[in-house]
Image (cartoon, rainbow, N blue to C red; front, side):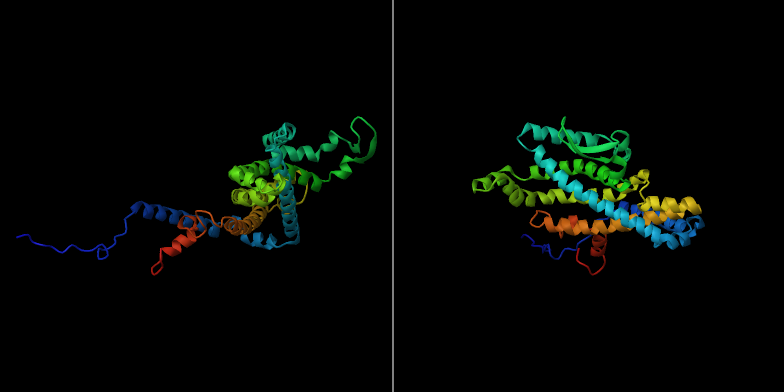
Length: 307
């Protein structure tokens, strides 16, 4: 006679979490390194934190910060608008427009932005006077290059025109990511190519364009420090002017770095919400576990919290 045994159901079987000792070892090593880092920040008197926070909200530092933000906003606007135009030209069937856009991107991506800033700062060595008129014909008006291209204008031109080359490739990649049939269907409904681009293609391309654009904006904020070569008093150059007088080099550099970290953190938060807005309807949404940040993943592991 066959003996019948009771087989436990799947629901009654205990769940055993997989052991991962490597993670605990790595976490312990990271904790030790973080403790050492905090210890050196707190105990090393050469950081001079009192000097750092004395200058943190000084008028000269805040004025330099305002100029840095101004440079970032204006340069990014120029880069986005001109970059989008270059991307459309690059995708045009007209070989002249496509060739000019390609040459622009090749030139400005192939030379360092620091060199471009120097060229704009010393443009008067090439063109002492800038004029408007008919090519090879009469001249209507002219201007002194030194009077027209101030350090601020040179910084805007150097940063904005360079950024346009990178934004052109970002926008072109976003447009190409949209299925070609979307534009063809819009044109079949009677839309012009430009209207189809604005109403159909670009809204779908934003999901691809926005993340690298946010990274470019954060990079632009830090790249503005290069305009110190033009003696324009943005954040870093303002700090340099101060420590050249009081010789508190490290504290002033820390002050500028803290402001850079604060503004980039704000931009990162804004980038997150903009990305989430344009990612609506995507396969992986902001609530998917793979997109959660480290703090949310850590909170999910706490007792009483659902994973």
